[in-house]
Amino acid sequence: MTLSPIGSVWQVWFLVMFGMFYLIPISREDGMKLWNGMADGIIWGFFAVQIFAYGFRPYDEVRYKGAFSNCNMNALFYLVTYIMVLYRCAEK
Image (cartoon, rainbow, N blue to C red; front, side, top):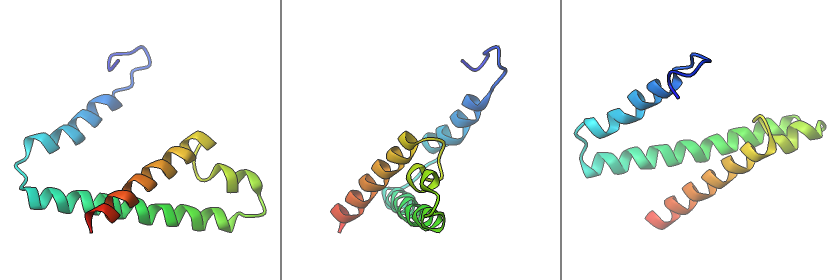
């Protein structure tokens, strides 16, 4: 996949970025802070996208499609946001 005819090497960069989490020593407390920070960022990002969509309310395509390439990506973002809200609520 990395050596595809298109010449795309983004998979290598993903491996480097996310693979580094397995190589660095991280305590359980720091890991929980990382998860909480990611969850909070996703929830705040949801509100930012909703404010963006509300600004373009007269234009139905932008409102329903959101800031993504299609409605499936928008629904996936809603699902991830919902999971993060459940995670934050279950933690307390």
